[in-house]
Amino acid sequence: MKINKELSKQMIELKTLANMVDHTLLKAGAQKEEFEQLCKEADNYGFKMVAINSYPVAMCRNYLRDSDVHVGAAIGFPLGQTTIETKVFEVEDAIKNGADEIDYVINIGKLKEGDSDYIREEMKAIVNTAREGSIISKVILENCYLTDQEKIAVCEIAKEVKPDFVKTSTGFGTGGATVEDIRLMKKVVGETVKVKAAGGIRNLDTALQMVEAGAERLGTSAGIKIIEEYKQLEGAD
Figure 1 (cartoon, rainbow, N blue to C red):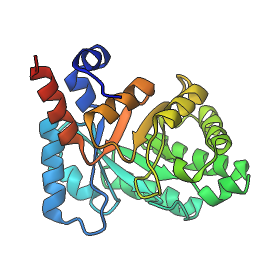
Figure 2 (cartoon, rainbow, N blue to C red):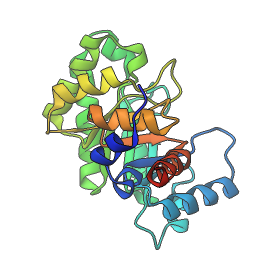
Figure 3 (cartoon, one colour):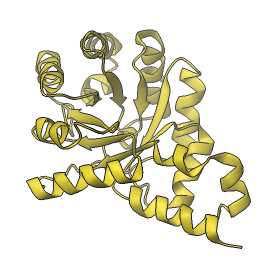
């Protein structure tokens, strides 16, 4: 359904929407000039964070040294199939290099085995490491591979462990964020944990639908397009 000008203005202001965007560059071949441009764009548009892999964290921290934009490192990305110890080391290394936030992928196989104790242990280790470093933590479920009951199970653990966010997707799976998933996750975590939508958010209509459903962060490589669409909407009669 097309979201009109009146609804968008009732829902959110432009500056607030921009500050929900995690400006994303996670492709394998990304080079120095692209990261520099990413950081300039994030600063110019007032985005919340640049979402990158671990290697360019120090570089982006330097580019953003005089900016309020956060630097976010992807951990265990994109499959989640590394040990808890490896993920914790990645978080520690990201903090050392200047990360303000981390987004880590759960061990999806362990979840599908029904091993909730492992998922809890992993989440506690990573969230506690982030908390000790005074940075924001986000838990990526990769919902496209999960049943609703599995999504609920992770969100219930998150409600107990209290990461800052639960997140729908890496953007590398078979599907991305859906309004239904945002509503489901928000229903489980309530006000205890925030929800981040990521994957497939490529236009203003989709972004606003995610916000309306309960998302408080939007992971997207189309942030500039989304904000420019909003500006056009504001200028329309």
